[in-house]
Length: 254
Image (tube, rainbow, N blue to C red):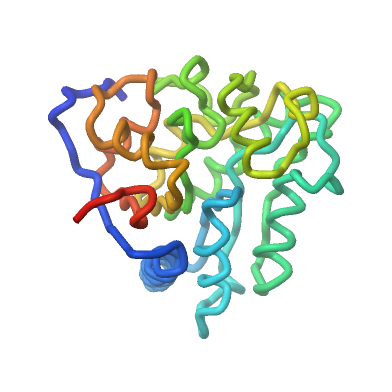
């Protein structure tokens, strides 16, 4: 997946006034996408993200009536290596609290950060992605421009892997503290299991929820910076069906 010139842009921008309005709008598009997938195939494979930016979207989505959740096969994007599923920052815990406990999903494949063999787990999760071929992904953008846990030093637009183990950079780890998931830098696990950039780009529709003033700088970089792994999110401008939902704090404008 070679990076094209910076002038190339297919990313659709949706500006909403508040985080709640952003969440509703992103959830409505996700619901429409789920119904469209249901109309063309029996199973509905979807990748979900975690984090503070996803809360409004997930909470709105799980209240939309008459969605065929019994046909949805869920994946999530990443998890810290070595973190217990009982830890408040565990993405498995987040998914259970915000998603799988609220809707009758057919199946949800968790990323197990405590697996005894993370490399083998990456291969197994990659095989599940290849088997089910997700058709929709709900995600965000990190303050350092990461997609999933593909920080600038780890991001590879032509990564041969679908799932891999990465070392988290300092800015990424500091964001986790700022959002209240951990108390100090030493508490943040240094490594994570993550879907790669190509794994995300294999998915036909991407819906990004990026609210809040802490994301204002990275939204501008995503939209305007040269496409490169220095800001992994810039590659979104080349995806054929990616939608970026922002609010007045993450995208101040008149």
